Image 1 (cartoon, rainbow over the protein chains, first blue to last red):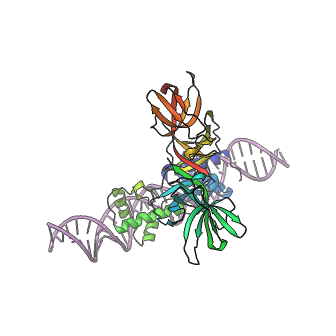
Image 2: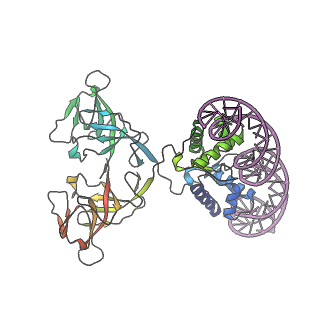
Image 3: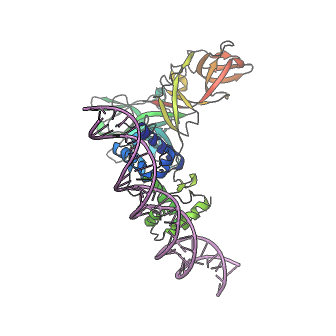
Amino acid sequence: MEPLSDRQRQMVTFISEYIGEHDRPPTNREIGQAMGIASTGHVDYHLSVLAKKGYIEREANTSRGLRLTAVSEPHPRRRVYHVPVVGRIAAGAPIEAISDPNEAVELGDDFAGEDAYALRVQGTSMIEDLIADGDLVVVQPAETANNGDVVVALLTSDASEHGEATLKRYFRERDRVRLQPANRTMQPIYVQPDRLRIQGKVVALIRQL
Amino acid sequence: MEPLSDRQRQMVTFISEYIGEHDRPPTNREIGQAMGIASTGHVDYHLSVLAKKGYIEREANTSRGLRLTAVSEPHPRRRVYHVPVVGRIAAGAPIEAISDPNEAVELGDDFAGEDAYALRVQGTSMIEDLIADGDLVVVQPAETANNGDVVVALLTSDASEHGEATLKRYFRERDRVRLQPANRTMQPIYVQPDRLRIQGKVVALIRQL
DNA sequence: CAGGGAATAGAACACGCGTTCGCGGGGCCG
DNA sequence: CGGCCCCGCGAACGCGTGTTCTATTCCCTG
């Protein structure tokens, strides 16, 4: 990114603070006053430079017609995703698509992506993988999985459209797929690949204590 | 909150959307145009009503001088906290106060509070509580704890200032405190209450897979 | 030293934009 | 019927505000 002069950096800082305080961009005159610039024309000059260098965007003939671009944010403000809790999942039980709009979690981009969603785990089928009843799993939609991934899988028990969703570890074996629970008291499920649809991978786990 | 007429609710909605799109409030004329109101005076009338009812705040004689109050936000925009990962913790080992500014997580207010911080767990001392090596625990600073809480405790082995930090379950017993690991191979620690300082409670657990 | 880029002043112009005032029309209720 | 509230129009006033132009000073560089 193109470098800024001290004065210009100072101006970006002021704009950022002003927005934080007022929820709207400052006027040219307000900028000038804050920076000790007497001439609005001169403020305009600085703004045009900032725009050319890409630190702000301007809208012509519009009051307060400027906005900070991503690069000029002090801390690049991590993306935060709104991850809805869309239902419950357990071994052998279908996802209850509750989709309660009240239930959702905010997660940074280390845990969630664009269209991630969360499911509340029901039961102890994954207990040996340290996934407990009541935990929240964050699911990233995916079509495929690697061996050992914890996935949300949909079993189309016959040719019907909808089947059972389940949370298991995925293992591809020759001509079949093994869906392995992490619970000694439960047996793995073996299924033909064409009877299985992977809904997504579990990318994170959250537990509230 | 005082009720709004349909038209007024519609206006709040538009303002909210406009801000979402432009990062600045609309002008009275823009509001009128969007809502099919020909007279700017009439828009002003509506705005004054909204202000009186507390849905917006206005600043007189200021272009785009309005802002939505908390109540008028569609989803009240959950608070998101920047939770720094300040170190590692294990049974019997002190917290390494790495405080790497690069490592932090963004968490919604269901998981974290104002001055929460996170620690990466080292070792398997809490494995039976389903807290694994490498997990992240979110700690809410606190002076006291209830029986059974998972706490970060500081053991001042003698009268010295600093001691060892450890992650354990807290149990008060008559004249002593039992710090219980969740690992059959480990023994509980018994300590006099005055040799123990509770740093905080573990309020959430996060694991990236 | 000449020249060019950054910083600045001052003034003027032309819209942008909030505010005010007067007027009219429905619907509801005592 | 006579208020009263919500909804709307239109116009005008006047300050808010972006834009443009002309000059000036300082510093750095060739």
